[in-house]
Amino acid sequence: MRRVTGLVARTISSSVAIQPRLAQTSVIMTKISSSEPPSPRIGGLRPPSFSGGVAGIVFFSAAAASSLGQEVHAKETSGPAQKFIPKEVVLYQYEACPFCNKVKAFLDYNKIPYKIIEVEPLFKKEINWSDYKKVPILTVDGEQLVDSSVIIDSLFQRMHPEISMSEDDEETKWRKWVDNHLVHLLSPNIYRNTSEALESFDYITTHGNFSFTQRLVAKYAGATAMYFVSKKLKKKYNITDERAALYDAAETWVDALKERPYLGGSKPNLADLAVFGVLRPIRYLRTGKDMVDNTRIGEWYSRMENTVGEPSRIKE
Image 1 (spheres, rainbow, N blue to C red):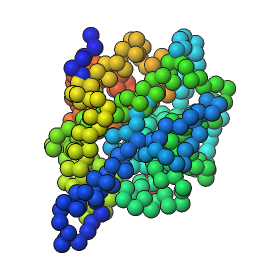
Image 2: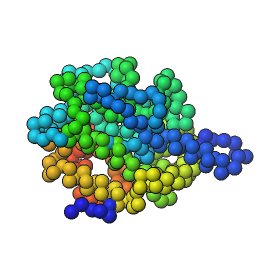
Image 3: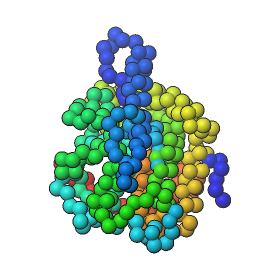
Image 4: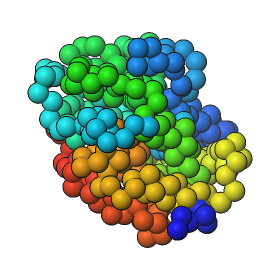
């Protein structure tokens, strides 16, 4: 039965008071922690948008994502690409961004080798070359792709040009659920109290592109700022009990599987990879452990871990 209980401030001189630091940190964090802008689809794909909206998140405060039988199985992702063999794939990302992790889940599952460039979140100098100032950005043999769903759609169609993508099927419905609902639940959970906010920033600063000084400021000033941002997000998205809402979402997803190993049937489809991608960074935080302990999603998640396998990232 479904459960219903369901960064960083720029380092400034030591003579400046802590309150202005927190204010600046909050502004920066809000920019980093906002979602990818929605964009209309054309011919089954949503074109990249270079204006409006907000994007990428430091961790998880973002804008979040029916056919049967043969159509579902026809759209299963099918492992390593045979028709699409790019020479160079580069992902510009924040390590903990759920939208970036959606893209990585797709690349890892399909065994597409890729390089990672970690974007420094304050000045973003790594993407100065681009007019698009959000992450993820993926370059494929020099071609720029932006917006996680657009990136995945584009790669999928290059791999499987024989498969047409529908706006109305089960897979698309659940991909939209990820972007429009599931992702919104993450920040209120991982920043719901002081200890969890600090735990999250330990992860962020350990894996992100921060200087030593930025890491020190981020852990405490950033965690404090995002604690208050998460409260605003709860109000914005009408979340009363953040843990109960996350548990309910996990149960909703398991119900959608209808006892299938994956939504795609015998193999994961793009919706499976989207859910797995946004949940992967939180899995071993307190939030993720609670989710697995208190819902039925753990078995599916373990299958996905095994099926997606090791990252196909090229380590330099």
